[in-house]
Image 1 (cartoon, rainbow, N blue to C red):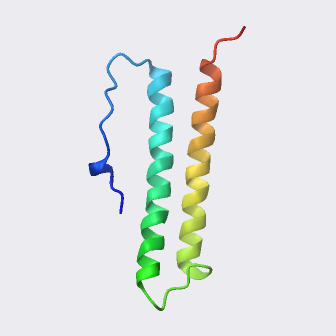
Image 2 (cartoon, rainbow, N blue to C red):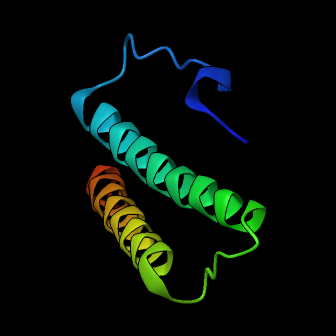
Length: 85
């Protein structure tokens, strides 16, 4: 499974606050998706787990929604940074 400790580090020096805001929003989305991935993997390993319904599914739906909101936030930040013209 993927974990943040295995990911590459990103140097934030020299980035403006809006860039950092977009990067944080993207990281939040990645973390939310990763949490769902881990839950899914644990469910697959359990022969009695049904990912299509129940508590596992509710948590996955909430995680995907959280990731979607974080991506939308990043999109808003990045769109505000685009130069017009």
